[in-house]
Length: 298
Ligand code: FDA
Image 1 (tube, rainbow, N blue to C red):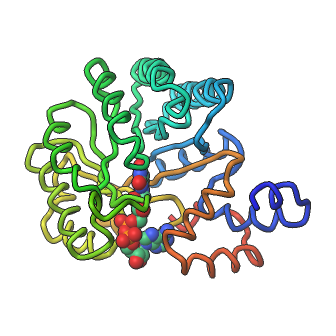
Image 2 (cartoon, rainbow, N blue to C red):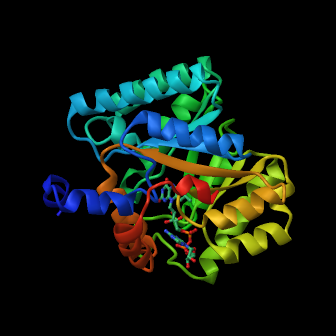
């Protein structure tokens, strides 16, 4: 489907109009320029060059080079950004040593430019490998953070170990379908787990990103005063609930917007629709009427 749509001169521009709500554009400059606008408006930003499970060494090196170029550009423009990425994009699916080497190089570059990195969390089969690499790098680089999935039973154990590392922790519910013996599905129980994980970080005075779009989570986060804690922030994906991001930001609460750019926008669009199927209506409307500058919504 992806190849068919991206190679079609008729379908490609139509789908791209729908993707534009969630992806700033094909180019690094698109991400950096929208990021700059949001920073001027008082948001914090994460930036990702979108990529997939890369199983070709050359492509992993290219991805790493792109991240380094992104950091240089952010540094030159004095843009305080957090660079976010999957370890699979820079080599984990080929050889963990390659992902580790690339990550070390990126962490060094980020540190020299006053930037931070955030490692995303992937499917449970990779959790151990990702945490092992994170822990090795975090010892030398406090500017590298890690994402944890509330849906995995193991996460309580992991977080109690990881709060002793210096890097920021991003808490997400988890985007992957996992077997029920290791995972709690979407439910009130999961929301409670999520909030308990945030509370562990807040109580420990550990930097935490509350990465969710869920009203039920935010009602509790606000009621419990988590976002008034200097170490906590809300984080949402670009294009999702921009009016809510603005409301929080206008109330003086810290909000980070997660921006993406790159030509691999098709699967990113599919993920946004899959995680919230009513987005299909938004996508169809954007295909017809989309003008493309969604940054004005913030
Ligand atoms: P949930 O999925 O329960 O949705 C609750 C409500 O939120 C929905 O009913 C709807 O109202 C709203 N909502 C949710 N998604 C929406 C959407 N796309 N559009 C509009 N409304 C929506 N996952 C992972 O496994 N590894 C990772 O590294 C990351 N990284 C990451 C970074 C950031 C900044 C965010 C925000 C999310 C991630 N995720 C992730 C994804 C995360 O695990 C999860 O799949 C989504 O955030 C959706 O979960 P919610 O917490 O929003 O709740």
